[in-house]
Image 1 (cartoon, rainbow, N blue to C red):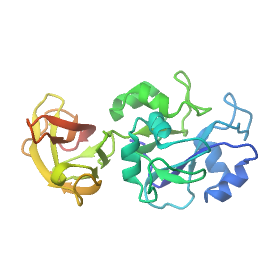
Image 2: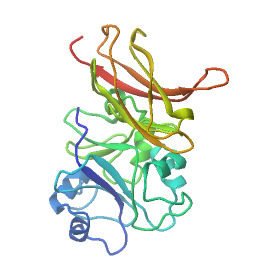
Image 3: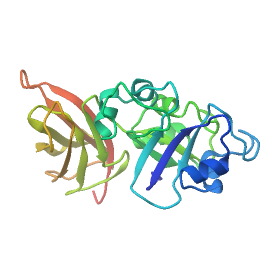
Image 4: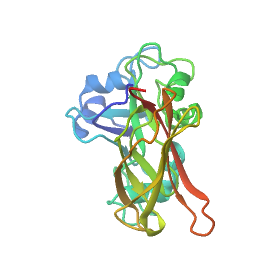
Length: 270
């Protein structure tokens, strides 16, 4: 899998921006930005950028693995959420710097539920979507302002924005979509849950329950968002190479599953 480590910033090109000024601002490198965004024919002339298009800018030094979105004038958490298939409430809960979800400002960098995938030889957007368990339309929407991403033509080395599965009240950080998952692997995420109870289970593609339903407790109870982390024991051996992790809550009224987040995983050693 080609999901990248490190910090990446999604920047919307403004009048007056140059690759050099962006490299300085975001502690990156011009050549890194060019490669990550395929800034060459047939998408554009070499090193040419256009106002309104979006770039994925990798920080030169490996830092924490996080995807940041640089806000531009007129954007809201709602409009950003529509782009990356995430709820505004969740975006506010993910960012301690946001005190009022109705107020964000230009150049503010906010954490978003997304990973960056480096396109490999032989990839297509459809094959990437299938391997990560994220819909093709979701990926296309997240990259709609990228010059170098189209349904029919992508290049090896280009960085692709891939939204991670989330609901209004839950986002899963680990495992990342399509990653290896085995007995004892960790789940980490953020949840807004009644009495802070977060449930999880794992099944393979034959619908065999690999890890039965268990619960963990987030650090904060609703209405706040609280981080959670838990190690997942396997009760059965997987019969297929891939499966799904389910993270969710249940209704206190009728036990119905709420806020279900499904993450596609690969099993090792089965």
